[in-house]
Amino acid sequence: MGTMNISLPDALKAFVDAQVETGLYGTSSEYVRELIRKDQDRQRLRGLLEAGAASRPAGVADDAYFERLRSRVRGPAGA
Image 1: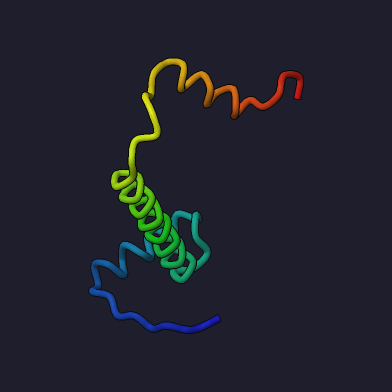
Image 2: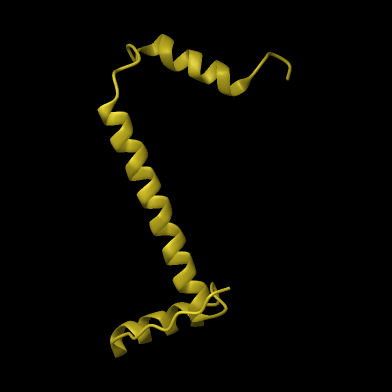
């Protein structure tokens, strides 16, 4: 695992320390890693949304369309 040292203003360091004190994170490093993972997820989602917005519509999103989606998610009857 690589190491990175960062400098934070006192107010931000106090905020990170408070997050660790909640018990949700064992260390400030865990908190920062979680923030980075969430940002990665946000960027992936943004890319998917942009790709979807740039693509051709696949068809009409009517009641029948959503029922077909629900059927696909549920899988074969009795499964």
